[in-house]
Length: 219
Image (cartoon, rainbow, N blue to C red; front, side):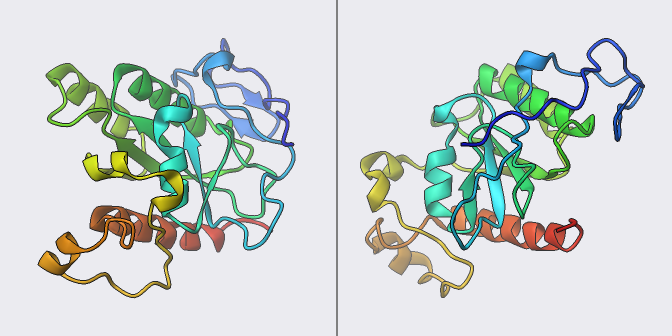
């Protein structure tokens, strides 16, 4: 089982410091140690094919990582840590849009900006609605602030029909899959047969970003 790596120094009270290879930008708010995700010192992936990208839940098991890992075949669950010892180290932070989720996501984004991720490449942030309808104004403003710290952002819609599916019933998307049927045919289709089009769109964009990042990462 992966275990936490020494967290590359602890610059909590020393912004602008150099900790090993990590240069912490001056003036950056560094989240306290307990608010950061651990950096794993052993590989999470033990079988092939290895995940092309990892989903890092920002707060707890309700962040939506299990559903998205099931839906996106190239994705892996990073177990709420940074997969620094894995072959592919591209990461997407996943968070619900409630107060706790957004604050936790912001902490992880700042951890990444500070370079305290063991060399993982942050692709962006996926926000998952915690309830149907529009966000309250205070949460909309907080989401805007959090997203401003991410290299890319993807906002998923609320998908009520997923509440009726078991984990094994959730349809899986792979980059090699043919395009789903258009419009009305898709709406009439069995919900266990085709993933929601928005999930396919976002999954494809993340996969493309992960492929590009992989060419820039050392083996």
